[in-house]
Picture 1: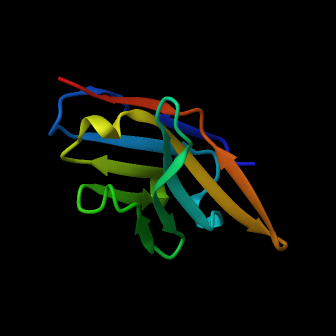
Picture 2 (picture 1 turned 30 degrees about the horizontal axis):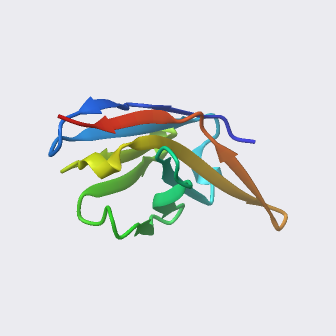
Amino acid sequence: QVQLVESGGGLVQPGGSLRLSCASSRGLFSINSMGWYRQAPGKQRELVATITSGGSTNYADSVKGRFTISRDNARNTLYLQMNSLKPEDTAVYYCNAQRVVIGTTIVSWGQGTQVTVSS
């Protein structure tokens, strides 16, 4: 298991920016894929963005052009830069890590950080 701790959430006005961080207990070089997911009240958890160990990224259509996912292997930290925030981005954001060990995928989640976009 990988221990993941998110930070950086908060209250921001529409059009504002936030940067989320996810600190990992394991070196990122040992993690095949990491990502950000979010869950709004009454809705299912949904994918926001993912990044592989090779640096390939994938984004939900709703955040393309506004959010950027990145990873700093030296700091064992995953980031999500969120710009031009909208009220519909309000949710609890979760960090995710997936490691493939002898053909088995081990999935870890952080505890989540609240992002509220409101005037």
